[in-house]
Amino acid sequence: MGTLYVVGTPIGNLEDITLRALRLLREVCLIAAEDTRTARKLLARYGIATPVISYFEHNKLARLERVLAALEEGDVALISEAGMPGVSDPGYELIRAALAASVEVVPIPGPSAVLTSLVVSGLPTDRFLYLGFLPRRQAERHKLLRSVAGEPGTLLLFEAPHRVQAALEDLRDVLGDRPLAVCRELTKLHEEVWRGTLASAVTHFAAHTPRGEFTLVIGGAEKGGETDHWQAAQVREAVALLVAEGVPQPAAIRAAARMSGWRKRDVYALMLEAKDVGES
Image (cartoon, rainbow, N blue to C red; front, side):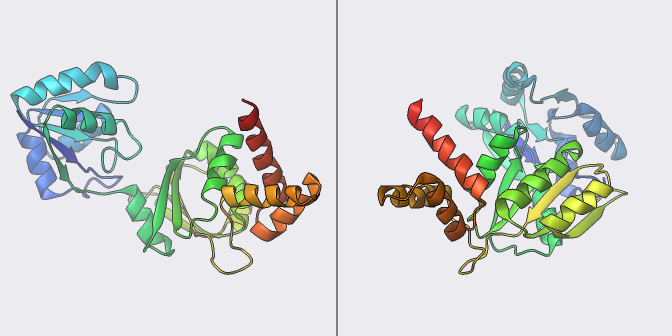
């Protein structure tokens, strides 16, 4: 039985790859790549002729058996389109399947857009929460953001360029005006890190059309001050206690918003969600 090597590859600049990664990409019998076009550019740059098959979101189930069969004959390398496999890509399922089949899984560390953005942002790095890509629908985005509004660690997320403006507006509306770093095209020719606040970012990117690949890095919730945000459960509990004491729900929602740091409309939406859950 072979070994599955989880190989980190460049997020942009092709020079950002380790000597160990290059050696293993030459030695394995097969490379499973999220994007074969990107993989072949990297392999051509370093004269590597190892066979490559595609393994991406829409063919992962069909390809899984082939990769596991290849592991019975020798070693396989898993690479993503960029960065470390398994982070916001289908490599996670292959890693789990390999482990279930008693295949040894060995990480070959490499670049990560998450960590690269975090360290260059200028925001605290001692604690952070990675959110992946935000949901496409606004109601679902708001729900997710409310659930992390009280998180004191730095928040990180990926976003597509055509959704950056909507994401910034929702972040501002739900989290309040926090410090922010917008990291674009890291390690590539048009690399840019824009730093400011969520409110100023909304204005800036309304005037400058977002292009490229984006990572947003947002300051965590402040503690012990007026901007300290409560978790959703705390907000619901506050409204319920006020209503139980005879306060009309609209007044209870306004009071809970003042106490929690949430916007009144978000508290109202939260209570509607709770009602829908209760009725379902």
